[in-house]
Length: 310
Image 1 (spheres, one colour):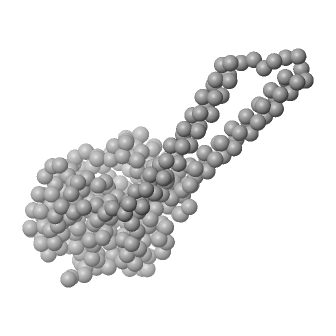
Image 2 (cartoon, rainbow, N blue to C red; image 1 turned 135 degrees about the vertical axis):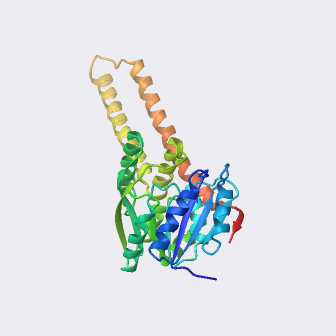
């Protein structure tokens, strides 16, 4: 079995329009810089002809291209996981197949790796072709997860990075289902280095990472690496209990030591509904954590492979 120096792992979901251009661009960079490589394509259950396009590429470049086809759409993080587990290289580079993360940065990743860094990640200095809403929410997300997490997760760094084989082996040993790979990499430690780059707009197709997927991804990230939401609920509960206790003391004082009575059916109902809402929110939040524990305890396979072209 040939062990290349670098494995390129690239997941794709319904990228029929752009996968050919991506391959030609990537291959050109690898050949021009004389990088010993393999390319591992992962088709994340695409419903278009993405897999056929990958198979055609592999037929033309059987020496360095491998293709994994998942049995359904398992999501971006698990598709990357499948590719990383299949990679054979001494180091693994992960990037998406939409050319937003430029392959031209890969030689710089490799140079930093050869200098002794086990993790080299791309840091977005500018994001072209994205709406103000996407840029604003991404800005908030990266800083929120960095503040909340108990590991040092770099800001403005997506799934565009190089991992040494030591780090890859550690990531492969992790079995948790709700994966936030950037957090897992930060948790593993090792020497890290950032490489700044400009994230380009898409050259073909449409983004598959809509608002709902962004929300789910953010929630997975927060619940995987932070207990801050639970602590926030506990603090809110303590604060509301303190306010309620003060209110009770005031009510008793007014009733026993004055000639007034405490009026306010409306305010009473608002208070009850508010506290009830906090309780339901707390139970729901705890339920989310428990559900993730349940998923991990079941120990189902993280993904299933429909076919593999080696």
